[in-house]
Image (tube, rainbow, N blue to C red; front, side, top):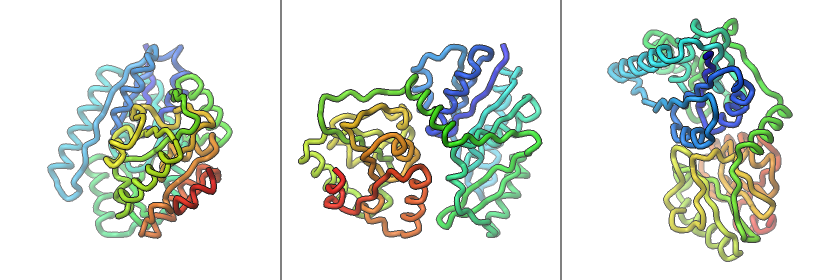
Length: 341
């Protein structure tokens, strides 16, 4: 049977991967290769999709100035490539969704270029990730570019967003076909996949709060725990039932563990959660918050509430959320939040 390979690189890819599955399932076996966020595999498998196989590829980090770690990464990628070719040599098409950060997917796509008729880069969020990037001309970045080329045979560039470096895969335009869906196309896909594969949150409460936080959010503010307790106390005083959805790979900050009513399975992509107008949605900065902000009212980002000291990080995250929707409100205090409830 002919095969299509779909690389899932992040939770935000899932809805598009499922749409591409639906488009091709009658004529192809679909191979989902899940890189890094391997817990997504549990969700994909739970759907019991016909004509599919799921492969997980855990991420291994490269210590950039450690020759042994580069050699281990190369050996690891070569082994995965050989396994793919041994099992699925008849590949007609490959989808991948991002050309930023993820060197493992880039390396596998690069090795598969000449073993596949069509390679599609389905660019559904990179334009947002790559906003306001500038060239990084540091010596370290120049060395890294050379190392990626010599050791992993990857053509990359390294840009800077004012806070951190961003690795970007330079693909061959003559081989890789870039597809950028319009906003309306994204909404149609979103609605279709959510209706078919979405997760409905059940509640009997009139007032509910869906909290979207990831482990690591607490590092953004030295007042995180104190302000989180204040937030939770306020919501409970107002008789809200509290639901939390953590990141599929990282989970949620420890401070929420004993203060929440319902924990939603972190393996479920957050944007596929189905709720109604009895919910408010609260988070910091994430694709899930952005996507839900396109669908629901009463969506709040607490970037200002948590008093993030680094102005660059604050503005970068607000701009990122605004790139999804203008339906998100940014209260700076509990009193400010009250105005919108």
